[in-house]
Image (cartoon, rainbow, N blue to C red; front, side, top):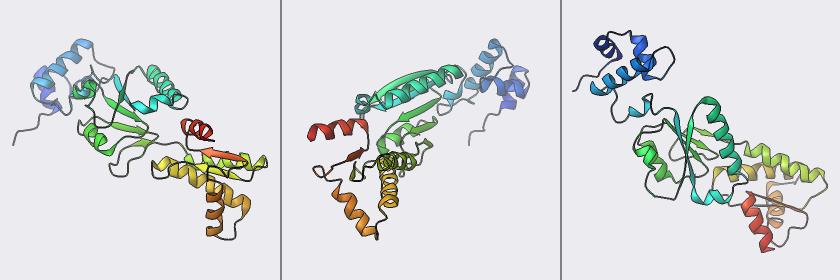
Length: 246
């Protein structure tokens, strides 16, 4: 079995302290650019930076790849604001963003294959098989507005339950009672969570005598032609399609 190279061995070879080597490898302040280059070159020559960890090198760890499925570019009212927020935060932290669109099962972006980024942020839903392929590159992956049960991955989610509850409660407080919810509950956990928030607000307002009565009421006013007062939809694009169908 090949012996693992340590930072101490790199330090001994270059006559540096272990701390200096660590700072250089992790792109921290405290060493000169010349020293940083020497450490990175030695680390690669000695096998410390193999193909799976090479992305941690100082020359690639200021880049982040943003992945967004092609169809989500149509919903810039929501995702556009997310991308602007990511860009602003990255700029403040001194990072550059590579924004890539993708389709299901297409090739992995070149910046990922070539280990030119230190992290991946996937915005919106992503197919589990494609997610597994991305994670195989050993680059940190973060999901934004999506959660994968099959392929556990760090994620940042909106509070869908509370948001839908507050929206429904607002309509109820305005006097609306026949409120429908439209969304594919099998599509993503986010949509199911929004439905739960809507359902909770409706239950509190109407105080249905049984769960069955509540479900029957909600189903009645979630039938396309029976909505008389208001409608809550899973997203802006879907809401526009709903109104076109009326």
